[in-house]
Length: 259
Ligand SMILES: Nc1ncnc2c1ncn2[C@@H]1O[C@H](COP(=O)(O)OP(=O)(O)OP(=O)(O)O)[C@@H](O)[C@H]1O
Ligand SMILES: [Mg+2]
Image (cartoon, rainbow, N blue to C red):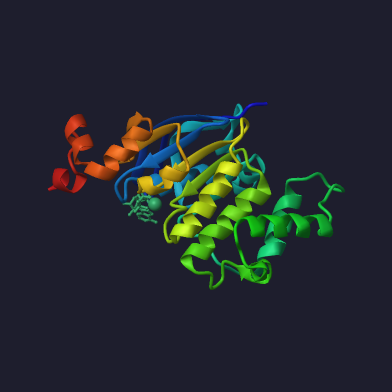
């Protein structure tokens, strides 16, 4: 079945402050959507709210993956349903090795009695790590513990490659990556493009989108998607910043508005 992810009027608050004020977005299998927007406009909040992070309270709207209500599911169920988030700041988990973490995540997605064999798992992980030019030692290190910024990002992509998700949300996957790593990560993402997988890529820079060509680019401001277009929109934002969008749409800076 082809993937369809529909977010309709999603609202969310953090400590009673409304951050998401009605997000509408439809991602179909095979599509790559990019979200750009100034700092603090709610991009990571959208990612966390979709994953079911407990700090964010969804106060309105719906999010459905292939007709299933995501908002009714707990965090694990959302992951099992095929939603994957590469976080802007991946968490460190001491005491759990990267390979143990990945293997149990894979097995959680399989029927009981149909667990992946150790040999097959190791072979797969080694192949994917090679693809990402990762040192094999990283398999045995505790998850993200002491990883450099760029190493964490590459490790998130390793998880994406191994877990075969239906909806991939990448939150600033390009931040902290060196130029070669950016290309490697982009190649990893491009290798996963398929008719039954959709992508939502949050980024500040067009640079990443030179390597991963989006079908749609959305601008998020003050908790809403205020403008959508194609890759040319990202190019214009890179050149001109966000002021022209605000002027065009009559958006007043919140801090100014509150004075
Ligand atoms: N735990 C929290 N308590 C209070 N405010 C929060 C909390 N988490 C996020 N916020 C606020 O929510 C707003 C949106 O944050 P969010 O991280 O979603 O922004 P963003 O668009 O991802 O920004 P950036 O581009 O800097 O990553 C910000 O003003 C932020 O300060
Ligand atoms: Mg963010």
